[in-house]
Picture 1 (cartoon, helix red, strand yellow):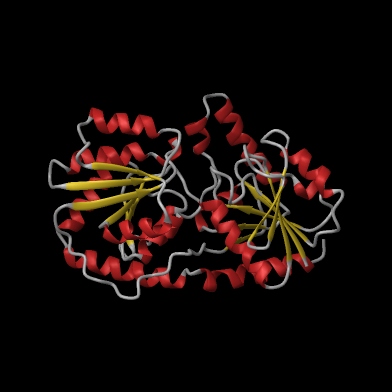
Picture 2: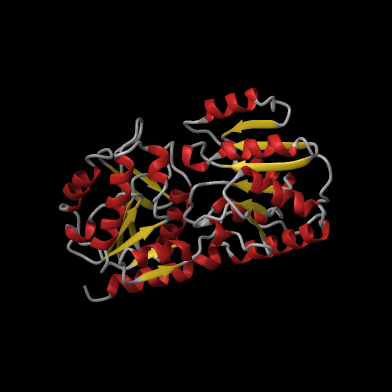
Length: 365
């Protein structure tokens, strides 16, 4: 069968992230089953029109304002596809109205408040309303998402058929869980694109409060548009000795640092799932996360990590301070997180998604 994914970015795009890594894993699964797979995406500086990544044929054309038109123009000259995967990132590709074949919608998270983090009023309000009406327009299209939180929002917006499949990870769990006592210094880590919606400033403010109680060290791995502001905040608060910016790091170093950390901290406005939570869990490191969509699915509160009471740095401090007084609970969280990560490897997750995609490709239109 022939499959096409429409996504605003591809794995070779310099600003690609977790969504592209996850998408690649699922399409790789289809290729391994003998299917022909295409990925249409936007241009980026230095990117070629055509590429091949793990036997997936990448086609690029247009930017944010023209990619849909370019996709339609390219599509008209292609042999018929059995299924088009229309991936939403705030804005869809409107494939059900022009592809003339079966379509499914793939969405990691409903942006909602994230519009406010990137755009001023009234653009942010228009974006949120557009998103709601788009979901209603797609109400008869089968949706696929990684979290129950996103499913509930889509249902509220009128979508009738939604399938939830948790994401997997490439990170292989440690073969043996070595002891990691909660001793000084307390080692924290955040792995993220440094963007407004990730609220890394909350993590820095939490470290500022924690250092008054104990020796603490934070590693911030990633780059992004607010990196300069975050470094200025660290300098302003006199935290240079407590906060380390690594920039982009390779998988081996990331895993090593996650293994050394006592906690991964995730304070995003909203996530589709929280891929780095499971990656940390595979390294025997539980996460402390905000009570927001996606993160409350990737972290099982009081079992594999901690979900804070509120979306505040103070709540992060309270959660960490409480568990510092109960080291036996910390060891239980580590063990549970490590064992759960073993169940979320791609070889266990991909088959059920590929089965579903194949079934969608042959269902009546």
